Amino acid sequence: MMTRSVQQNLLFGASDTALRSESAIRESIARLLAIYSRGLLGGSVMPEDSNPGLPVSEIDNYHYFTLPMALNYQRNSYTLWRAARTTYFDPTTSDVFRPKAVCKMDESDLAAMLMKHSVALQPRKHTATWRRLCETIQELYEGDIRTLFTQTSGSVPAILEIIQGTQKKQFPYLSGPKIANYWLHVMESYTDVHLTDRGGLTVAPDTHVIQASVRLGLVQGGQRDDTELRNEVAEAWRNVLAPTGILPIDVHTPLWLWSRSGFQFSAEIL
Image (cartoon, rainbow, N blue to C red; front, top):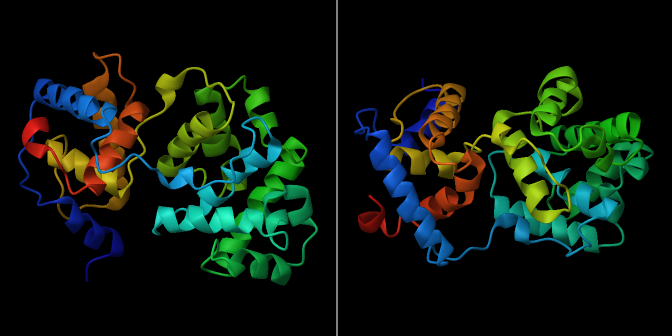
């Protein structure tokens, strides 16, 4: 019987997908970025654009773009962030974005608040993840995730060393290779944080990015372990973009939108 990850990887293409040269892929990326810059990839609205529109420097804004990210796994991202926005604007549920308040909540109350607008889909697992992150923020950063960025001076390697290394257990799901990189990309895009050493950010290898990578001939699809494939995609983008000055995380959104559009403009890009 095929595992879930192998079944999912069947979506990424056959294992005999033709690989292309690095120079050909770099030319394709240049064309893709040009098309993206013209706003032609089926719209440029990203899931995280569904947000309360808070001042970028506010503590609530930082927590808004941190906590739901840990639940953004194997689900529709647009639906998740719409649910998060509704939850924030509902005065009966908005406290879930405040770690100090969450740490004082009864488990059943927290679950009910997260489930009310479907931020959480699994009452036990998702609630436990949310609470653990809030406890981490409260205990290690005095209830303010901005402190993490201040303590590390916004250094990407330093932040990743904490959330994926020394404090990995305190950052459930947020510590994963896909979500960790994408979370920092989102924080840079929607808050006032200034990240340094951005070359430490890899492309966030989610389903759409992997599908686009296979389509470009960067990697082969087929029946392979999910983690192995994601790691291969991240490393391949790091290598192919190294001579260009383009950082891997900066091609995430164009790749994501291209895949989601059903690979429009493939004739021009490839």
